[in-house]
Image (cartoon, rainbow over all chains, first blue to last red; front, top):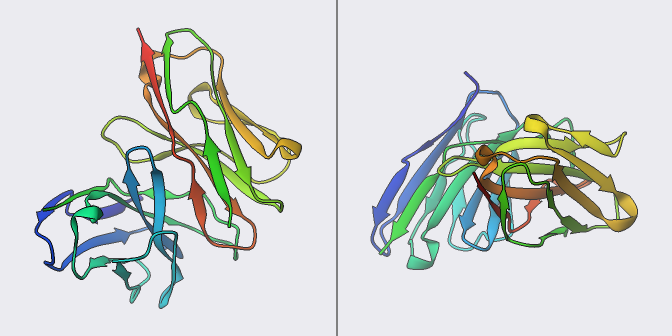
Length: 116
Length: 113
């Protein structure tokens, strides 16, 4: 079954304790992206990746890191989480026939992060 | 960079009523347009998309959207809603030439049986 898998689904942590949210897709998609969803703000893009070793900032990259060492995986790293990073996070992937021609995104089930 | 505006963030309807959600974007060039739906507690799913061709596109579950280039709009419609259409709806825009997908803030739609 084609899917985007995120782990964990729920995470509660404390300020400053490094964490990683994993994302994996089995569709051989080139494009992967992370979004955060906050009430009244919709989805905002954190980082995206066009392919292995190619990553770029989205609209709200501060406080986050990503890596793309393999095509299927795109982990989101919070080196020093803060309470304002409490949010619902979605990973997504898509095929891309070329630059600026995104196909529909396939979304993971989300990770609800609480930073106290 | 492109931006997306959705109005009427909260919409409450009765079953069988018609639904129209507005979406406007700010980008003067060619765009790919999407509507996604998020049912309570679930991830986003694609409702419909527009890349080129007929500006009236039909999606799943009886939804349709019309691209009006002169108005920079991509409004979503459904003639007769059902209780199961209760969800949050997001418009999204990808400007040709960049690799970012911008979402609007969403419309929370509640359908009362």
